Length: 492
Image (tube, rainbow, N blue to C red; front, side, top):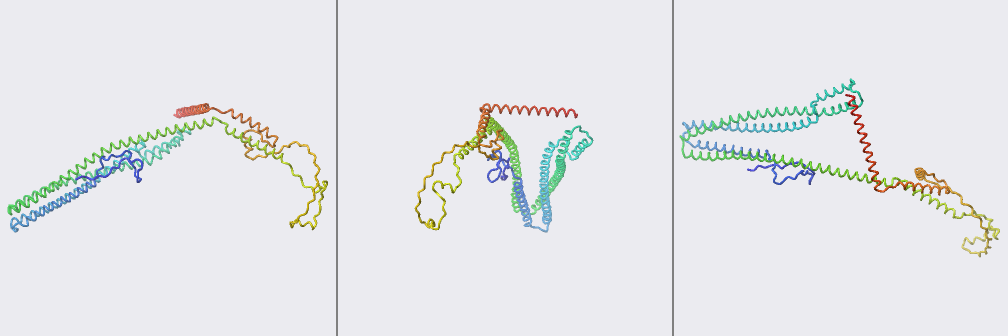
């Protein structure tokens, strides 16, 4: 009968469909699977139940054959009673053996559980042992902390740096105390589990011994039953006894075949279990190799990304060095355009003529007079028209001489003041000062443009600057290390 098995779990990798993690290494379709002991035990229990039914059938056949025989009150009846007593005894022994086997199986299961738990605890202990070093118990950690605190209190340290170092060591020891306590608990748990394993192993041996004793007793009872049956057969019909014996032998063969099947199922289970464990070891190696390969790929990708980032930083830095005074040049160009706009606006205001104030006596000399409006002149309000008198031509005015243009004040915003101050140029207060300031700004722009570099020069200068910074940092680190070594030597 084939044994059902559970699915492989395998090493987990990235999440796949449905949120389940896909294995790091694909599991082949023909890979062995983990055999399920629970399924095997369920099948074995069914077979044991069937064996019990077979045995009950044999007992019924014997009882029926004995009931049909004659001379119930004679020697045969006495033998029948003895045989029935032996059958009852055999049944009790068989039930006792079944109970003992169940107890033994339960004890074996507890031994296995205790062994697995102890194995897990030992793995944790080894891990903690590597982390803790020599200080494996909370008492040892506390003792070490007290020694360091005593050293601090008694002035056993000659420098502040040494005190800081001891305080950091105390802090680290306090953090490791919980791990030490956990390790102690794990050690106690392993001891307890081992004691439990030993107790149940001893119980298993005792139960096995009792099973063997009961089996011997069972076989002896069967032998006595067979001897009694033979005696009864001598007093009974030989044909009926032969038929009963054939039926009994047929059922006994079924019992034997059932035990053979049990042995083959157990053997098949062990083979599958061994094959799975061997395959799992190799598969774990493949998963570990795949993890290592992915780790190296990530490191290589990080390295390439870092190199690209450095190249990009170098390129950006070199671009800045191509025109280090780009901001000042742009500021000069902006202020020059701004001041030229101020000049153009002032010139436009000068060309616009001024409006004279109204003078009512201005046109008297030219034949006009200001007259009071009469009531009759209200017709212009109602749309009436009057004939206009011809206006005499005014005498031409002599052209006045052009006066020299006056300097006009120039206003600036707060941002413009800051721009002039940043470039170190005086702020023009009127239009006469604007031209000289523009010339200063043109000179400043020309001066800043003289600092422009080629791309090759900028990259070379940036590399030299970085190399210089690296050498200075290396020299500073070396000096600090030498100073620390010298200080440590002085403390010793």
